[in-house]
Amino acid sequence: MGPEKEGTMKNISAHLRRLVGVWKNKDGQDLIEYALMAGFVAVAAGAIMPGVADSISTIFSKVSTTLSSAATQGS
Image 1 (tube, rainbow, N blue to C red):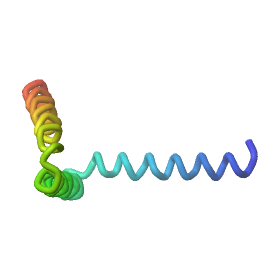
Image 2 (cartoon, rainbow, N blue to C red):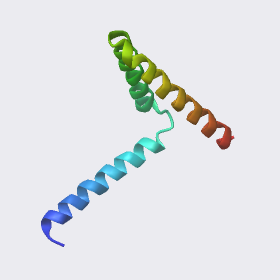
Image 3 (cartoon, rainbow, N blue to C red):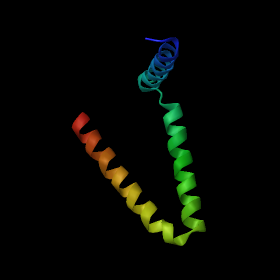
Image 4 (tube, rainbow, N blue to C red):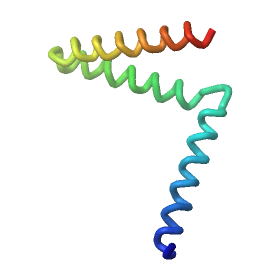
């Protein structure tokens, strides 16, 4: 393996370690912050562009259904 590929592999493994670290985070503070920001952006987009509001509502309904299903299976 050349030095260029080794550097790429190191970068990938560093990203994976960071991602696993996020999953291990019990608080989930960063994930909640990102979810809140996504919600705020969606609400703003719905307010500014009324045609997008129905699509946003559909997406959040699907996410809610998926999360409810996952919570039920995890119990």
